[in-house]
Image 1: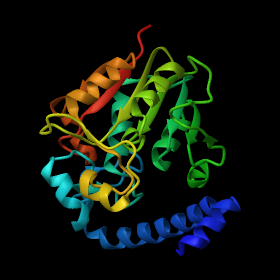
Image 2 (image 1 turned 90 degrees about the vertical axis):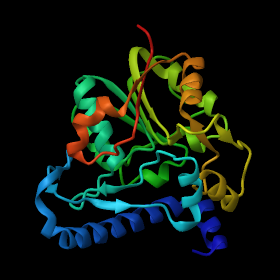
Image 3 (image 1 turned 180 degrees about the horizontal axis):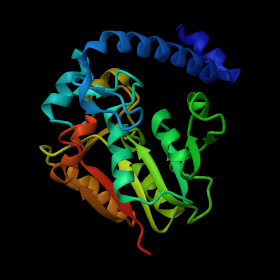
Image 4 (image 1 turned 30 degrees about the horizontal axis):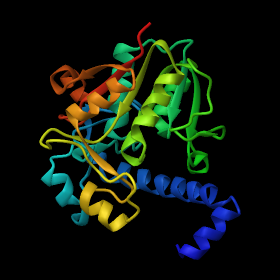
Length: 279
């Protein structure tokens, strides 16, 4: 889309709504195509824990060539894999993993949940069992997921202290220049005894987190961080340190603890970060 037209539509307040509907149309076409293409793999293997469809192969996703070098060089665990999208509902591997962990570890019924930058399948699952508030800095982008999504800046949340039993924010913090401020805000609005699931791409081979919080150069961001709107790649232990500094008692679930969820086609090297606020 022409940038001047995009700017005009944003000023008019209709860009995200139009773009969201366009994305929904593309998703419908994509699901239709993959259901046909993957029909021959149906019947055994991986099971989607959202739609219960079973396939021996899920849809892969690999980084484009122009971002692959940064991801490969730093061995970033970022969600790319051989089995990423369910061919039947297009749920993503990271959604399926979070659903599995929540079902296994967290009681949802009667709880208050903040779902930041909400994924559609995960939101629907949460909504069946809990009272869910969705939020994002650009809420219009998510109106096709939830028509009541709230406008919220993660570094200055407009929610009262101790409001939520569970916070889910999948791959948000790597976008935010003041990430530690956002962590403190998530901690502030979490109830004592509550849990925040704060997933990020990370590396175990870096010596420290690499970041340029003030960068605004999409081409350079792709080169450095593997995505045009990322400002860092976390080193795993540094990420845990930052969470602790924000007040969280973080319980990392490592791949060996998550192996039982491989039947849902989740990423083998992923770590789930259960960030608790003490009672």
